[in-house]
Image (cartoon, rainbow, N blue to C red; front, side, top):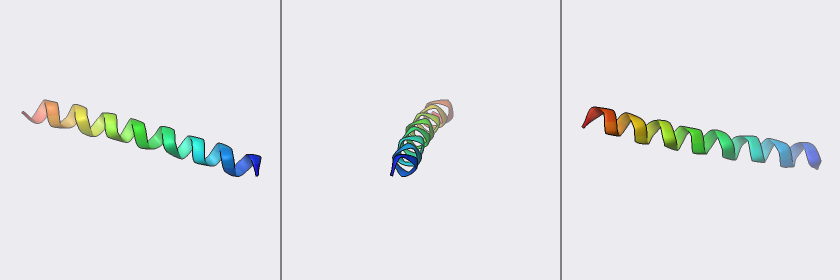
Length: 30
């Protein structure tokens, strides 16, 4: 259970980093 919780947390962090990267990319393109 704990391992899965950690995996979900890590994946959520990865998603937010991804969102940030996409935002930064879009700003750079403009």
